[in-house]
Length: 166
Image (cartoon, rainbow, N blue to C red; front, side, top):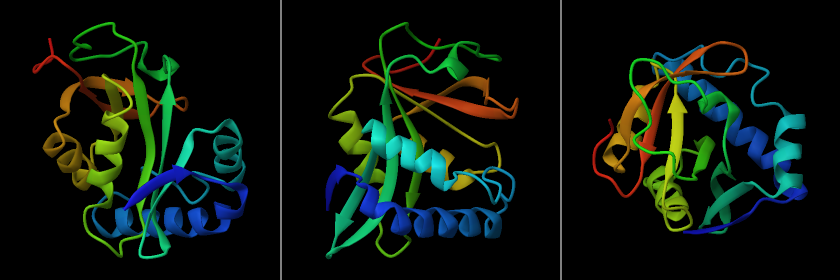
C-alpha cells in the first residue's frame, strides 16, 4: 500500500468510497455520524485543493481516503469529561474511510499519519465502535468529548509520546 495526495481527478472515486462508508456505518449501528450530505463533494474538493486529503492505493486502485490536517482544530478547543494530555502541536485525522476491499487500510493510514506527526488527534461518534476499536488498537487513548461545528458530541482521541492521558 502507498499514500499519495488526492487530486481533483480522484474526487468521483472518493465520493463512492465515502458513500460506501456511510452505508457501512448505518449497517453497523451508526446511522447518524455521516448524514447523506456529509462529507459532501464541495468539502472534499476543498480538502483536495488545500492539500490535506490523501488516498491509500494498492492493487492499482484507491483503497481508502483520509484528511490529515496540521494545526489547532477549533472543535478541539473545548473538551469535556477529561482533557488533552498536553498542549503540543498536533495533526488531526478526519474522514478516514476504506473502500472495504482490503483489510488493514485504516491501520496503514493511521501509521502513515503517525510518521508525520508526533501527536495525533481524532474523534468519532459514540456509535462508531469500528473506529473506536481501530483508534484504540492503534495506540490512541480516549480523552473526553468534543463537539463538532453543528454541536454533535464526539469521542475525542489522542496519540502522542506520553502513554496515558490526564
